[in-house]
Each structure stands twice: as structure tokens, then as C-alpha cells.
Image (cartoon, rainbow, N blue to C red):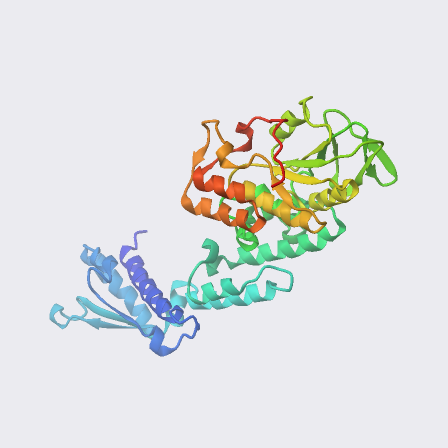
Length: 415
């Protein structure tokens, strides 16, 4: 049934409430005092266009009848054009009681939603979890941090629960099955997958971060990934009290089972982690690869269990050089930064291998926005990757790793 007049009236009342909300959010105090919510709008084509769109007399009468319902509960005060007859033409509407108006609309008041959202996120916050102060400040001002408004606060609250649970479960050093955890926390096996963007926001990941990379930060995996190792055949992997020889072209083992590597003779002088599987396979299958180098496939963004296993390998081998080869883009450098932070805890400095844009000559590279180049430059500056930073300045392009051929002879000398 058509109710154009009544719907237009409701739209006008919502417009008043939004105007009141802007005044209440202006100072970030969330104090809905009378002087803030007592707002009005003139009945002009600019201020109340929905009123002027009602061309039929019947629709205009329906608008006025609906308006009287708000008047009866003292939610609003209308003013009428004296020259248009008794209630023939609306002149102005003033909001008197937004709560009474919202009850007729069956809507929640924006500042009440914000207050509820703030209380919810405060309850979810605790030591060791991401800070929520910037979120609270944004909601107090009616803004949507990370494109998440107060109306969708449950996304951030649930995301905080996920981070908390993942941190506790990660203490035993194992990766966590994502859908198992989702079912346990929310009785919905796919709820966590719907939270990838809010999780990325809380973890400080870029908007372009892949879903699986966001989950990997927390040790959440859809399918557990083995650590793939390619190295000298006289080396063995320590698994508990057992030694498993490295085989050609590589061996795959669950990260949390790896205690380290042992050598029957010789040494591993260099370790190179590789971000993508195609590039790892190309390197592993190349008979020309250096005999003193261990190749490790990190399956994209490494999980906490991978980083812990990798550090145990470093401590067991004590290589002279620790390197990483990944995509030349924001994600690739963020992954490198995580590796750098991790290996630093066991006394190593990570160097980058073939991640200088000046080495990109494939014709498949992408010229990117200055903002992304600046983000990568900040990462390079933090970890002392000066040559890569210079390369970004002189050749501001990104390049996926798979477009670059493996080069067994490419070894950069220490500077």
C-alpha cells in the first residue's frame, strides 16, 4: 500500500534527528542537552525536499496527518504558513523530544548507539589487545574509524574476542584452525572470515592486505601449512628425538614440531626465505643453487608458529647471512618487516634479496601511487634497507615475485 506522504514525514523527522546528532557529536562529549537537540528546519525545498516532492494533495494531507502523531507525543513542534489556510502549508518543524520521535520511527538515536558501542568496546578491551582509544574518540564524534560506524560496533567487539582467543591459543606454539575457533566463539564457523577487514584495522594492516595474511598474523589458518625446507642433503631436521634428512627437492614439516637442523658435515652459511610457492619451487629445483644455502618457503605471511620454528632453525645453524625474497609491494615489505622483527629477537638482521625496484626489468611492473611508495619507504628506513629505499625513489614501481626469475648467482655482498 502506498504511503508516500507518511514515509516523507518520517524522512523529515530523521533529517531533524541527524541535525541534532551533528550538534551533539560536535564536541565529542555525547551530552544530549536540550540546547543541542532542540533543532529546527524551515519547510523549504532545500531543507525539506521530501515535503516539496509531494505533488498530490492527498499525499500532502497524509504527511500532515503523520506529523500530528509526532505532535501528540510532544516529539516535535510544527509551525504553519498563516497565509495558506488552516494547516495547509508547513512553515517549520522543531525537534522537542528526540527519544519520543525515535520510538515512533522505531529507530535508535545516533548518540545512544555511539554510547552503547563505546561501552561495548571498552568491555572487550584488555591489556595485550590493540588500543581502542582512537575508536572511542571517533565514535564520540560520530565518525567511523576504519569505515566501521558505531552501528556496526559488534564487528570490532567480535574481532577483539578473536584476537584475544588467538593470542591465548598461540601460546602452545601451534597454528589454530580458523573455522574451529569461529564455531567455538560464535557458534558460526564462518564468522571470523567475515571479520577480516575489522581485524586488519585493529592489527594495523593496510586496506590492501589479503584475508589470509590478516589471519596468519594471529596464527589462524584454514588449512595448516607445512614449512618447506630445501638444503644440503647432509643436513637433517630435528623432530623430537628423531632426525629426518633433507630430501630433494624439499621436505615439508609442521612448524611446531621442528626443533632445529643438524649437520653431518659442512655448514649453512646463508638462509633465504621465499614468499611465494612458484618461486620457491623454481629455486628448489635448480641444481645450480648454492650448496651452503637453506631455502625456506614461508607460505605468504608467516604465522607465529612458523616464526618460532624459523628462529629455532637460526639458533641451530647460526648462519652468517639471513635473507628474504618477496613481492615488491606494500604487502611484501610488511611481511619482510615481520620477519625482521622476529629474527632480531635471536640476534639477526634481515637483508632483502632481489627486492630493489631498480632490478625490475620484466615489463610487468606496476607504477603505483606516491602514498604506497611512501609507506614502503618508511618500512625500509626502519630496518636499514637503504638500497631498496633508493630504488623505490628512482624507480617507483611494484612487482610480483613470480615475474622475476630465480637467479642462483645473485648474492649481494655485505656493505
